[in-house]
Image (spheres, rainbow, N blue to C red):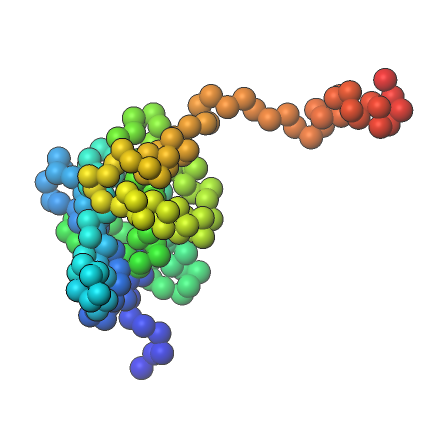
Length: 190
């Protein structure tokens, strides 16, 4: 018997009562995808609900963020010597920390244009896991339910991750910096 905990789908503990996230992908391609946080044994104690819905995504949005999330999570699962996973119709269970990260991506993407979604995914991938966890904690404290989509940190996530790449000017390369007046003064040239 292995000392490792058995997992299913995206690193979620297979044992009953674990704190995890559930991604519900309906068979009908036009129905939305739901992400729900399940508190496991902690639920129903001291005012904690058994579960809380976190976000409901249009299928077109889910279709564009699912693959970058899957790839990112599988890299991390492989590094932890866990089996990689894929999204499938029905209930997908996700480790609680990966679920938090997925919520950050979903919150930033909800309501975004098709043009903004690749930018959002790119910027989400550039964040460290710890940064995503922090963003989840800040967001869920005031705007963590599906109906909170235009409030506080939830709104800020979309603005922060959707802005940028399409309008950003390229930064000068290192060799281009030597032509700046500051370098002439330091080197005695100019």
